[in-house]
Image (cartoon, rainbow, N blue to C red):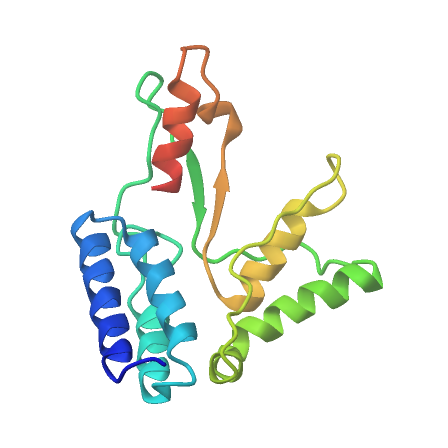
Length: 181
């Protein structure tokens, strides 16, 4: 039979783990743990869930140009000094795209999720945070990304593979790490 101290022990363990993560300065791990806490306490401490979700939405990483106006410099390759990303603060497709109905439905669903995230939060769900476009050149991957960014009024960051790839051992991985950071 669980004692009355079990919930208190769980909360104290969670606070210690949160402090441990915060002290390592790995903000992605902290965000992931806070997300888990919101799910864990949804039924036992429901008044905690809304503020946690609001924090996750409103206090993004300061180093991410996706979340804030571009305040940090775009990472560059250490050898060539080429920028590793292209930043477009107001992306708009040159032409209105015409997608297959299934693709249009998926993209509209993504836009709807992001625009109505409060309903998802209330249900304890998270909106889609990433999308992976695949296919051969010329099928509309960049066009779809541009259209999504324009619909959501978000900047578009494009990885410049010609700058990221390096002939030096380990440099490509370092460049990718800089971009993700």
